[in-house]
Image 1 (cartoon, rainbow, N blue to C red):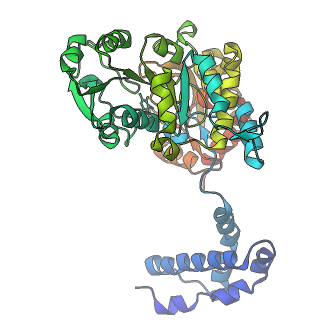
Image 2: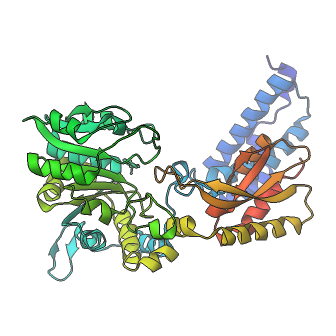
Image 3: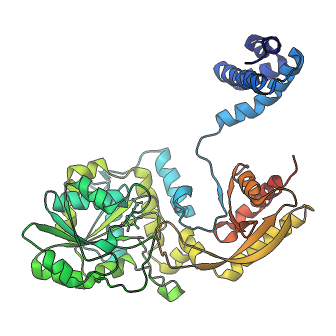
Length: 467
Ligand SMILES: *Cc1c(COP(=O)(O)O)cnc(C)c1O
């Protein structure tokens, strides 16, 4: 129980509001906001008295509460979603918003968001048009697909394809591909939601073409291939290539669909990153439909890309679910800007942040680490600092087997344990998301932009300060 005598020393809200300090804020903030902040601060003070038996005079309480008012008001004004510095090294980090957009896409979003656009208006003809016609042609050109459609994300793309082509019928999938990607995307669950029946074939580690062949019946609507984008299996394994599945589909008159996942538009293998099949390569294996995300290796906004044969993709555009999972104008603005960059592969590699981070030579990452070290040392910090080599993963359900060599600044404080340092960085301004390794906080420079280095240095110094 709080001490009733101590509670009586708390100032009233009215007296706080009438103070000169609060008066200053009442000129720049709505009264209700200042009042709410003061009430909350009083509540915290009351709780403190209850727990810790703090005894202060009324004047001391007033001073203490009013000194906390600016911080309280600032945190109320901050938007809940904040920019963070990704020093985790994970490039397509699902929890941190996946792909950062290229400047060209950011400009397109701002331009579109601010005013009106020809989203569904044919300017030449002066009549209504389809919002997707703006990006469809670019998608066809970049991938060689006959037809293209865009929805809210890849989970929606898979759901729409299954609902549109297999509701009430069977879809054959290998047991080794019944994957989960992020907590809420599980192939069996999506299948159930779409109304399609899942027919599992093969085993976890081995599935042969004959397994699919033997499972085909008059009820089979689709043969589905799912890329294992966030794990890999090794050892005694066997899987059926999409090309072979496509040939079986052709013989049996059953469409084949591949959930390609990453959405890579360029073949990364000549650049030392094997295993990331591009959408063009996926389509050339012959499936009728390919689906992918817009915000993984494509490097664009959150979106679900559906590509394939006209007779399979076009009907999906008028399916009732399509409206429920359609994309908004800002997504289309960003996507078209990213697709435009991909018209020239080299330009895409230089301008699309996901590709730039993925392909940046280790030496350049190291140079950035050295810049950070210099900025930290210049201020005579107590932190011990060293540059360490490390490996980072592309992340976000793309390229599970790839480890990119990277450079980290390893930070340790003589008195603050690494977990506490990591937390201080996370709670700082701007928040910095780092990782812990070998008893140190590791700041991975592969996912940090050049222009973020000064801010990052300030945040690290701040986290290393003694209270
Ligand atoms: C990432 C991924 C998904 C889910 O895509 P979202 O865009 O996150 O909805 C589905 N399938 C595969 C193979 C993936 O890699």
